[in-house]
Image (cartoon, rainbow, N blue to C red; front, top):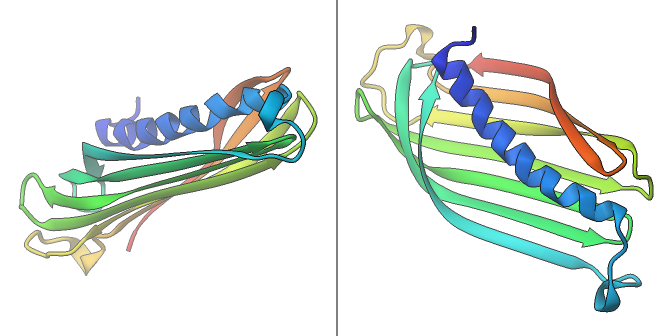
Length: 168
């Protein structure tokens, strides 16, 4: 059974993947009216976010206040998704300051209703203060995941193909 920290680190990327997958079925249907031809539709969203995130390098929960921005672009046979979440955090145990960032980008060009896509998701939790003792000062957390999306007849399924964590 995964630890509580591992579960929290995995749940947030799955939420981002869900946002990405919501746009995939739109690729399989033609754009209507004013969207037809070579026109492009872009939707951008910026949101304030507040959440707690576990830093497995310092074994501390971090309270993060920041922004989330996402952008989707669609035109015939093309879909692009960009996601960026960033903010400043405070350690709940030590009150140390942290910096948080998560990014993801994917671009798909296809006319098929059945296809596969892979994209990278990266997350960083950087401790800016050092009141908490961490052996070898390896207190900055890095997560890399390779996520694979398989779409069959317009219905997406998602799996994490590779996951690597590191304390630097």
